[in-house]
Image 1 (cartoon, rainbow, N blue to C red):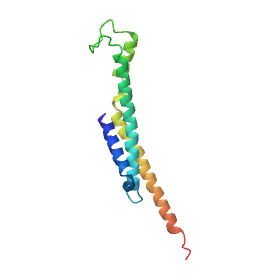
Image 2: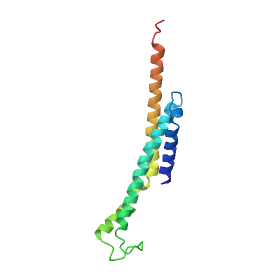
Image 3: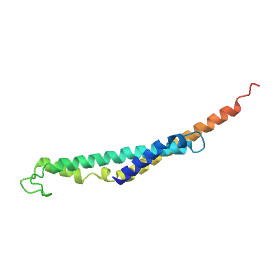
Image 4: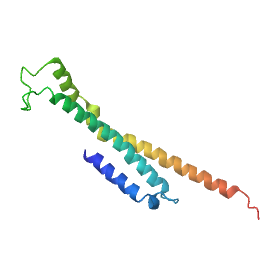
Amino acid sequence: MIPGLISILILVFMVIHRRKLFKTGKWKWFWISAAVFFGVYLLIVGEAAYFDISYNQDLQKFDTNGDGFFTANEISPEQKEAMQKVVSDTGRNFAVFTGLIFSGVLALLVFTGGNILEFIKLKARKSKPNKF
């Protein structure tokens, strides 16, 4: 939850200060790639948190007496399946780290691609002859 909240706060900050951050200049593509990074990271971590909460709620439906433990009369094939979803999903548990990697690679591609586009535009402007 904490990485998701941090991502939300940073994205809100970027939205509030977007005119200053995303204006043309040498830092433009840095801020665009940072927004892509935190947006994608928020989606990955948010999805993992959503499924974690959803699976835990599904499991708690089988705890009929509300003591937090599953007694013999509460255990069923459906409860075992719900328990398996909660305890054995390493992808959901490591989403914080895989999200960093995936978001970082994507943000790096956006940053590199944006700077290449700026370089091409700059070369194109310099190669046009003036009509004076």
